[in-house]
Amino acid sequence: MAANKFWKKTELSNLEQQVGVALTQIEQSVAEAKNLKVSSVVDYTAKINAKKQVYLVFIPHPCLSIYNKVSSKLLPELEKRLKATILVVAKRTIESKWVKSHRSQTRPNSRTLTSVYDGLLDDLVAPSTILGRRTRVRVDGTKFYRIFLDDQDKNEVEPRLDAIKAVYKLLTTRELEFEFRRDDVFYSKRGGAKKTTKK
Image (cartoon, rainbow, N blue to C red; front, side):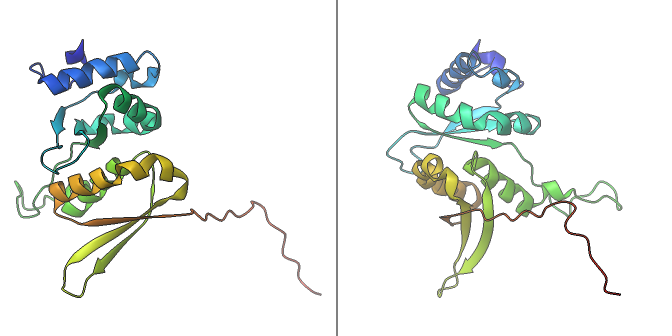
């Protein structure tokens, strides 16, 4: 049963079997998760010296749209069953702009380093959304990135921020700092007041 949840993979580790069984159980309550597949699962607890278990789940990129729809329901259920912090990212590929099979070949924007790193961060903070990104430089010349998240998701995301920072730095060597702020969105009414001209 657990192998059915993995994309083109038959030999599973003990951790991957646990995740596969948990996903099949969650399908009964979250029907939209039936089409969600997993590529692999990696234990990052020892790599980042975390006090709580941290598992990084890789999913195929075609399944990302399915995950985004069910992430708010799926993540809490997975963390309850596995008793660990679960981070989910889609598998992406970075291509060098110098490697070409033909002179006129161009690299897709989604395969650039910046696009892949930004996509990884979007996946890690889900189901919250990023309201803004700022690049800051310290006095000693080192860089860090300040990320603004929606204040409405603070209770859900805040306990996972330390794990997100550590895992993201291990994957990309980038340092993060998170802040929460209110999403001030202003809407304009359709068909506003008609302009009048003076005679």
